[in-house]
Amino acid sequence: PRPGERNGVHYNFVEKTKFLRMVQAGEFLEHAEVFGNRYGTAEATVRAELDRGRDLLLEIDWQGARQVRERFPEAVSIFVLPPSASALEQRLRGRGQDSEQIIAGRMAEARSEMSHCGEYEFLVVNDDFDTALDDLACLVRAERLRRGHCELRLASLLAALSGQN
Image (tube, helix red, strand yellow):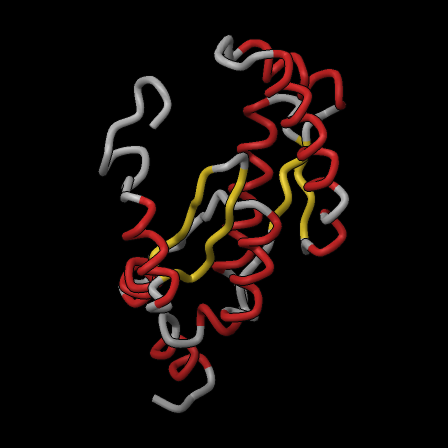
């Protein structure tokens, strides 16, 4: 955990051996190692939320996104870009928790990560937070309006309007 992060709030932290057992058991929808840390998204949790009709946003890297798209081809993929490399570097420095070596590594990894943005359906530039948030909200609203998502919810209305009631 980073300073201020709490188990069960920000992430569910598990020991490395347990994490590896979970990978072997196929419990993750996606998993990856990033900067020496392992991250994963529990598939059971995702499926339970989707079964409740909830929208989920997964904040994951390109490796994880690729795994999700393989298992959920209907998933909508959105890549959030910084407005520039210098703005990204400023943001990393502004966190005040990383050495020059760590920042250099994160910048190199970010460039590598951004080289995969062509794999995503949508690109959002996080220049102004409120604008980026609005862009994300618009994408979620548009997805909710797809016919496949609306047909069950609107079944009685559609039947009534088509004279089938």
